[in-house]
Structure formats: C-alpha cells, structure tokens
Image 1 (cartoon, rainbow, N blue to C red):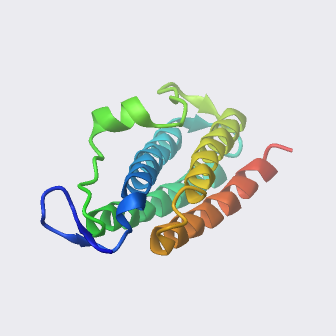
Image 2 (cartoon, rainbow, N blue to C red):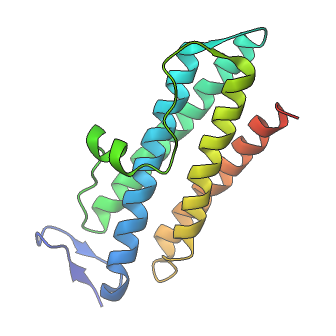
Length: 161
C-alpha cells in the first residue's frame, strides 16, 4: 500500500508500517555522513607530520565519498516523502561521531580519529540496515554506503598497525 507523506506532496512506496523506521534510518545516516565529511575536512586542514601528503589526499577521498552519499541519502528521504534535515544544529545534536579538534593534529592521531569516525558511522548504518528490511531500496542504499565506508575503514585502520 502506498502512502502520501505528511504534506501530501509525494507518494511513498514504503509500506506505511515501515515509514517511521525508514525515516529515522535515513535521517540518522544523513547526519552521520554530513559529520563524516566535516570531520575529514577539518582533519584535512589540520594534519601535520611526516605522512602529511598521503593523509591529506586520503582525507579528500573520504570527503568526496561522504558528500556523494549525503546527496543520495537526502534524495532518497525526499523520494519517500520526508524532508531531510541537514542543518548544522541538527548534525551537531544528532551525529554518532565524536567531535574533532580544530588544532593541528599529528598524522598518527588523524589516522585514529578517522578510523574511529568511520567506525561510528558504520555501526549506526549497520544497525539501521537491520531496521529497514521492509524497504529494499533504502536497505540497498545503506548496504552500498556501508560497504564503501567499511573499505575506507580498513584502509585507515591499516595505517595504524
């Protein structure tokens, strides 16, 4: 059964009983991905140390991927009739990621910060994947994002062993 969103603007193909879980999963994913891009960009600006160049470039890869995922998640939310909320106050209040320092940060510390940020985002994504099974499109989107973030996590974690 199709349901219109609360504003009656869009028809959602998500079953009515799954709408809340899908909405919450998309919103949580959105804020975490926005924050991941911000954490990576802040680290990009503040990293120092012998591995500066390689870490600096790897951070841009995270930023690029996270921003692309943000757009996909926000557009999926809109497609199911939910207005996505990516405002800075919403991100700050609801992200699962830890706050990052604005100070210059050693390359070794940046590797740990990024590994932890990716881990936090992946944990919440995986939790939400289990909650959106009644909407295979959203489930597939979140699985794809999780797969890429897990690959990035492995790459960052490999630098700290």
